[in-house]
Amino acid sequence: MSPSVARLVVGMALIPFLPGLGHFVYITEEFFRGSADSWTEWRALELCAVVLVGVWFLLWRGRVEWNTRRRRRTVVFALLTLASPAAVFIPDGNTVVGARFAELWNAVRAVLPFFAASLWLAGTAWTWRSSRMPSRAQLQAAGINMEQLLVCPQCGYSLIGLHDVRCPECGWNTTVDDIVRRSLFEALESP
Image (cartoon, rainbow, N blue to C red; front, side, top):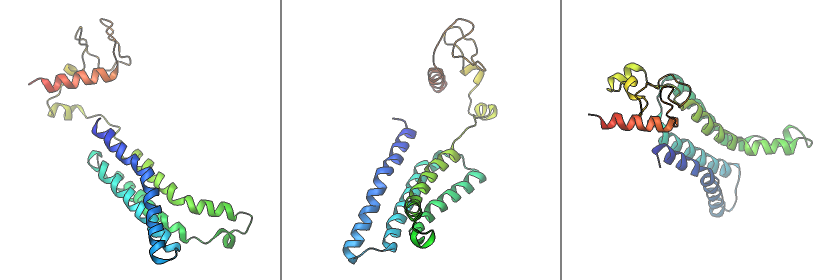
């Protein structure tokens, strides 16, 4: 299993873990205090939000190519997620919108922290993605020559810039994963 897949599995394990943690905290506090109120619910949800933001950030921070825009967006997503448990303090639907829309209002109020958690996961995944390839200068500084790296293993024809994974010279056919794997393995093996 690759490190990225392991990080993703650990991160996704938070999805069933966090509701259980929140419920445990809520029930435990209710048991020891004898009652539960909005503050009890807020503490349980806030703990879940802190764990979600903290674990997800710690898992992926080393893999992100940080810049000012990514830092700002990460802070915004984190603040929205960490502030979302305060939705428990939004007044009840009967007092705000009347009996007709009270049920809908209360449902939105109840799921707001979960939507914020989804926004954190999806927003950071989108923001932290790395869409750029290393520059030619970066590859050369690392001692990797792309023209020599991505060649057909049968005839030596350069595969750079092709839209197909088929060598136009000899007809050799493969997958992109296989080409990258072979090329990287050969680059690492060469002195």
